[in-house]
View 1 (cartoon, rainbow over the protein chains, first blue to last red):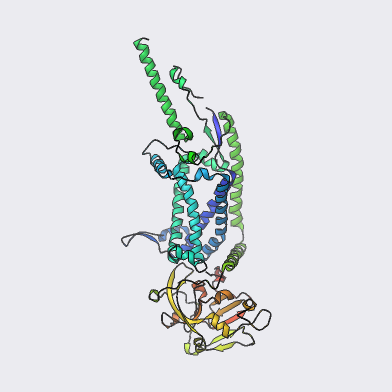
View 2 (cartoon, one colour; view 1 turned 90 degrees about the vertical axis):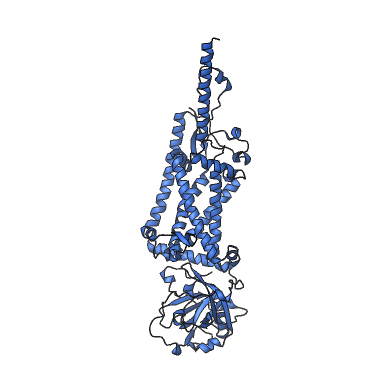
Length: 236
Length: 311
């Protein structure tokens, strides 16, 4: 069977993606070191707390307690690299045309639902797609929005006096901190699903994020005439 | 065509059709279905996304090319990752601390570019004011509020410390504000403060200047000594301030909290209260204020926190 090499990920996207991975990890890690000093959030229903962020065992396992200063040092150092990397990524998408592969359109939501049903083995048919399916488009555009929102909410709690208009817009200092925290949880959620999907998609898909290329089967066009022959179909 | 032949053709057609279906579904699963044909309204089509495909290659050739690319790219990526990890791990702690301190100082400079003393922190209704006690450094030992005096150094035309009483501070214009106190730990609380603006204090007790000329706060504040050092009477707690932040109208030398004189745990008889910096900078029980040309030591900055710690 013939193969074609598909150029999937430009060099810039691969670098930006892999640089972002440790940066985001460090931002989340240092964020948890900071959050520990005032760990007040949880999931509450009718005043009953189902889950508290985070259980003491979690902190002890990771060695989080009493590292606030270190958390602040890491957070306010690596934030610049996270921000710059993100800005370059957005600019690259905009000017290279790669945004065409990532942006969702209004109909994407419906197709993303079908993709989800397909991935859950509920329906067989996968909607037509380009490089990414519509669920991926929503997710990959979503993380850009989340990154921007993290920067904005972060600024609102970093400089709440100089940016008091922004802090007020977000509902005040306490709410901005809450939003900043939940954006982190969303990032972790994205990470878990992303890694699971990559694992399911297989090695050659993973390699394409390193090499840029993936070998795909050549598109098969079955000649109508072959249906009338008794020789059987052996697509080349 | 005999009945038998007809039957066999039908069966073969069935088999063929089944095979085509299998191929089609395999293509769909492989994600290589031709997006242009299967759905004219799909997102890739709408956004005019193009695929970049090489010429068809034999299996062997495609494997060869892919493994060449893999080898090269995994080597580059792996080397970069190792350099990052080991570079960081092998970096001496001192270098790291320097790096972080310089990052804090860089952030401070960026903040000061955007700083304006005219921009105010929001004020809150008085009834939202609460109480939370945190931080007892410098508040130990025998302390008699009645014997307390405020010493002020670095004043113009004054070589010795000036000694002030609480009444001297209370003689300055009395200002009340209800602002959000923010702790570097991440919590905040609305507090009502009463005291004298530090800017009013400095207008009366003028600091030395950088070039030694007479101070001119109105027209040439840049010429004033740029830092303020504040310490507790026992000198166990000490903070450093930049002049622009301490001159912000919402920085008070406070002697009352929530309508009552300060209690011991909140820094009686005189403390700093501000909306411009974290609680760690709002020193309790001020013993001495000094205007200075050098960046003053700071209790928490010495423990790895941001010296500026400003909003």
